[in-house]
Image (cartoon, rainbow, N blue to C red):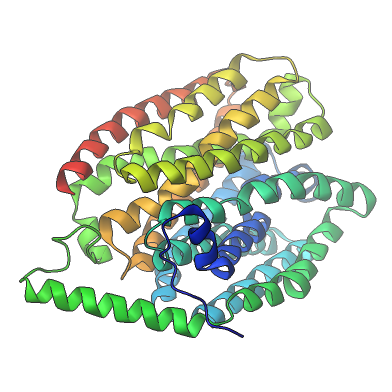
Length: 426
């Protein structure tokens, strides 16, 4: 099989031809991570709560605990992508996610349920998403924003395909059988496809290491420490000592906190609004339809003006989406919410990978993204429990959604400050 060409073409047509297999790898990794995403797990949330006799708050607390454990582990496991062969690394993650799906289908105790949730979150939402985005941001230089945007199409594709499919399989065979089928799909379909898309990766990795070595030699000759040039190779420890990182972080984490909380409690939301679950599931098509073009357009903007300078533009749609869902009562509201929230998701997915590569470099990108992905997972762990406790305390969904909109507005202000500091440093 022919080796992959260098992924540095700048023109749109040349960009797509530069490394189509790597683009397919990133897109399919995002697609298959759906099995560990909150929206997919929550589709069987009602059946899980009934089977284990859990309240909204109880299930939310267990889910949050499993997610927190996943995030803690991700800080250490996620950096291994910087050291291991990508093909071996990918196979291990796929086997782990398949095992998680199989365990979910057979869990009979709270302990096994918690372990299954931990594995789904860690291998799916955590490591598989991390692998696809890190690979695209690392190996693409020119056109990085568009590459990450194309890879992010896997998320809305999964959101468009899996909710209706999962609801149909659960109605036909049951929720446990649905999870067993997911395990089979991972092993029989996804694993061979991923390994095929990684054909020729050895040559790609050699070119990357040669480029990193050349940059480090040039920086050493100039008397630098790897951080004095744009895209320098910061270590994770150095990033943690950078004040700008903490200024931007709340804004970057806002979408994952808000969307996860809403999706996790979607059954309660649908009941309060008086909508049907089938109609709600169908609205994920709008989410997917908006995510793709928004991610690609935002990727083109990043390639034009830079990820740091584009920071203030990604979060306003999240505030608008929350206000729409809080005030709307007609069932078409969910389609409007999904469209606007989907646009925000597309932009966030593109930004979260391109920003760290642009500002801190790609040599230690796996370790840096493992940290930021873990923090994102921490935020997704906090929101189901927080919103579940508010629901149990009698707080209305309208109030909860307006509070989420307030957080998004605060994030916009912080991102404007962060944009200025990153841009001045560059």
